Image (cartoon, rainbow, N blue to C red):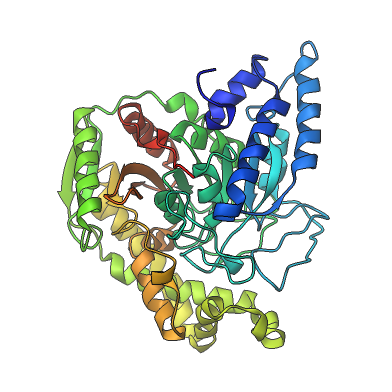
Length: 471
């Protein structure tokens, strides 16, 4: 092969294993060696399970050699995940000091589905403590660092997921998204990241931050990779009553490359305000690509995202304060300033305010669908208004600074969580300082197939997703 094994995409390496062109052991060893090389520089792993991964790879290779054996769509492919997905009897820290030695008794549904599809668990990834920080900072396990420039943030809270995929140390990763926690690290690290529709993917077996807004989604090198993992993990789960029960589409089959007549909306308010020149230029270039593929790119006003941002935050801090009430009472000193400052305000939100924020969601969703998706098929916005800032720039100088930092980074991502809509982050360029820039495509509920089709068509005519940081 012309490229090193660890530089192939997930679908490429899965096909190579299926055709016996490479072994799972070779692929896994390549990822382990890359992980060991980059870990001292970017701190993406909390635990690298090299021996267990190689043992699983040997079993995967034995299965491939058996005549007539059926293998899954991820057979023999090493993946690593945000350290909040439970495996019975295995430590899951959620990036915290409090759960440093916690061993759950259950296994997450999505982990079971990945294993059934043949995926190999390579390790547990760094993350923002309790998934409560959009920068990727972690005072307990050390900050995860951006592979494009280790002085800069990865975005969070799925920090290790964005970094490890960008650094080519594994082929994909599961993150979670409550206010941008998949899309922000995907954008900052130059990879693809899906914030799924609320209810598409089971959340059974992971520690939640906000039960009415948390979603599970993959971070991958390509849109096709993301589509494959999403099909594996999506679908009804009796252990998570919030899951939808319809049949999951074959997302890969829908990647036709055809966009003629597709209407893509550009919000005239909020999302495109305050962009740095690098981001503004990358957005214009992406608009031109979509037009060249036959899509109609239309500017239109959207219902006030700033209001949805505020309501989302009310819901998030209220639900987080309930989830953490025991530990906040008994072990407040074991939280970082950043996370404690994100939880404490929830204890001062009146129940009536929280319930009103929940009740208004249906109104705003209906308004958004009629005002936007009755006119266009998708929305296109920047994920962040600027390339990833430095770690030093996002270190809070006090609890009052936390809200400002969070608001600045998540202003374009949080409204989608409040509405429960899907959004896909796609690499769209590099800044003058060599840092990734990304847009997100946003759609109606359960329109992931359309998001994948549009983004895949874009990637067929651009090469930003193939760029690799030089660590």
